[in-house]
Every structure is written in C-alpha cells, then in structure tokens.
Image 1 (cartoon, helix red, strand yellow):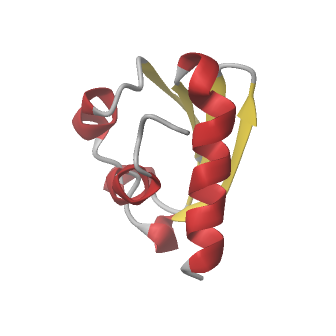
Image 2 (cartoon, rainbow, N blue to C red; image 1 turned 135 degrees about the vertical axis):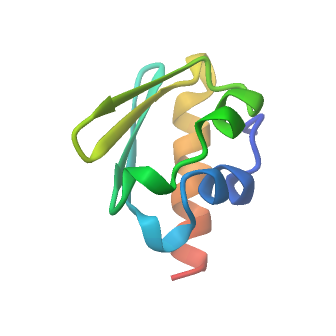
Image 3 (cartoon, one colour; image 1 turned 120 degrees about the horizontal axis):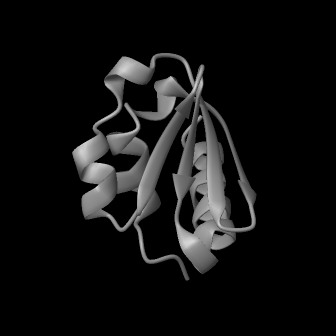
Length: 82
C-alpha cells in the first residue's frame, strides 16, 4: 500500500486534467504534465517525495522503494476518474 494518497498526489500535481501519464522506474515516478506551473512542489515534499526533478514536460519524483506502488495507485485513481 502506498504511503501517499493518490488523490492528494494528483491534486499536488495540478489535478487529473494536468497529468498526462504516470510510470515508475525503480525509485522514481515519471509524470508527464500538461502544465508544470500548476505543480505544488512544497506539497510533494510534504507527502514524502524526497526530490523533484524537472525535465521538460516531465517530472521525476524520487519516492524510494514505494515508487511502483504509488505510481500504480495514481494510475488506478486516474483511470477511475477519467
């Protein structure tokens, strides 16, 4: 079970309409966004994301060992709310 509620994480990322895709890779969550300006980075850190890296229209959220479960929960949440 992820330590971050997917609803809260998606809200901090600017809402469901701002998140184009989410995937995990070992300890990172890769999030493709419509508008990076909508992201509330301080909230991400409050939710346990240790580092937020911006690479163009994608954010890399370093979440540690829970990255895969967090990404899966976010994808499930987005799928249920699309």
